[in-house]
Image (cartoon, rainbow, N blue to C red; front, top):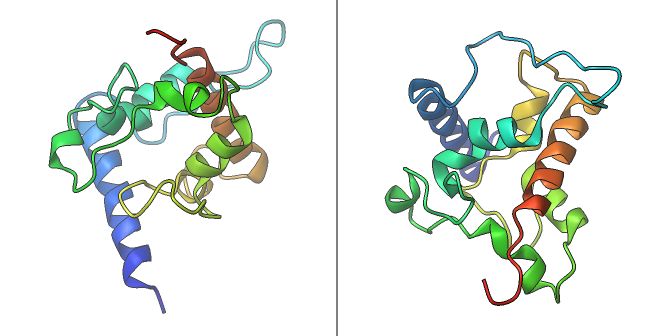
Length: 153
């Protein structure tokens, strides 16, 4: 039996993916991720591409919570550039990983409006293995680290 929260999260994930595809933010269905370059890349996934494909529709291209869907949500998406400042200047990579993955909810983080990306990536046509899910989330976490605001910004 599927819970109401699970159905709502699944519906929200579907809506986000549909909007991303319709707006040209997502790659066409069935398209494989970029091939890995053995000399410059460890993974076929690129954090900035993943962010713009899956996250920007809610969090905005600047990751400040101002995406096209932000005003339509019950709770505005957070400003993802503030993680380090909120944690004493240290980027909390493990926390960000848990929030993005979503399969093991972090109290006070994420929520029913946030798609469970770990499950969505697991069920995707391109890379549903545990290693592929981890690679995608790790790339997103590394990309978000590059966007962190400094004191006074």
